[in-house]
Image: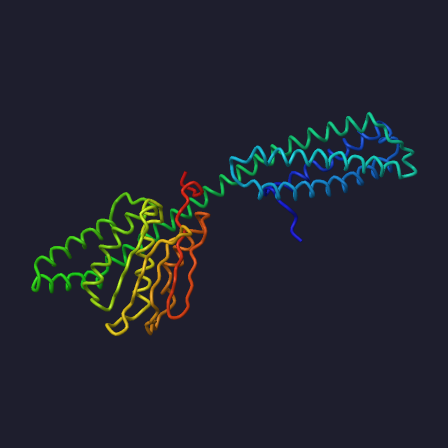
Length: 351
């Protein structure tokens, strides 16, 4: 059973304060009688250590519960209020238990003193308030460090993803196929060749931009994808069928840059396509606030399948690092559906 942890330092701090707090509480209850005999001092201190350790663990459970209940930064005040309020109630019950246990040990010859109880309660209350703010500060610091590490990892993921995307476009096969298509168009239709060259330059401009943002508006992604689709459809003809249907209210929502290109490229790399069995790719916004990419499935026979979906896996990891709802992949009835949540820029590490 895992003990509740509000921060990574909870039980380290407990080890530091357990003995001195136990001695102080025992002294608060018994006064100088605590030091009358060694066995009284030892028994009272050990007993208080056990009770305080259990009390600390219970407080940790309540703190973790409140942390999950009030997880937003704007709710910190409510979280601390409910934490401290319950701690103060629990403090009174724990002190009453300690005082009654002392009364029940014959050789202590102890009777509960209400004034000592009040002073012990006030003292423990201040300890609770101090520890609450201390743990909150430690928690904030740990979250800041974790966000910093996530941002560094995300930068690495993004750079790797960007490099992978660039390599997938700027490779001899893609250049050969693009130039071959352009050459055919020049001979057949000069106007079509000019448009092809224009769309090709848009694709490369988007892929090779020197100061690429990590997040991109859906409108920019769709604009890039239309150019990308044009190049692909010149090459594959009727073997590739595409459809984009995006509600206007979603066009300014954001995604990691090149998200759609990664998914489309993955679909084309994995599946064969012919005029009789074309690859259909549909991109549409949904009323639930997500983007869905659906495509037919006609798997290629691939000898090396080790990295066939490597870039899609990288995209899923990127969403995990951003603390966003994860991309989901579903396959049924010969179709694959990839559900892409939009990025909530208020919750990411880019602040």
